[in-house]
Image 1: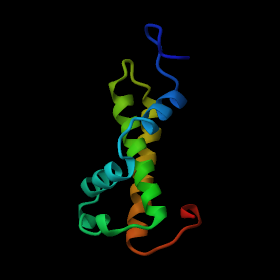
Image 2 (image 1 turned 135 degrees about the horizontal axis):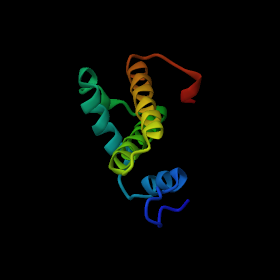
Image 3 (image 1 turned 90 degrees about the vertical axis):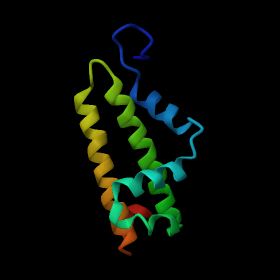
Image 4 (image 1 turned 30 degrees about the vertical axis):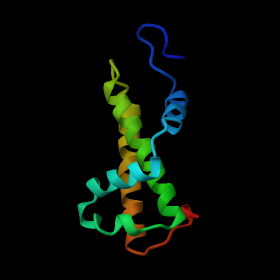
Length: 108
């Protein structure tokens, strides 16, 4: 499905690729979004420069952009939207864990 015909949604892979290639400074934008989502860590986020945290910021931004796009769709793909919203919450939890000095095999 390519999304070009009336009533069709764009393919999820194409949407992700578009977000990754959007030209947005993904790490910077992801950091800004995390600062809004995690006010308790607002001051610590800008000074965290671990490569794993930068990657997390990039993925967070792409995920948030996907949520924005999915919310615009008519009809809405509810299951996919819920999946991305859940992913966003899990990324936020990983960010908190990183900011608190915890480690995980997922971050390497």
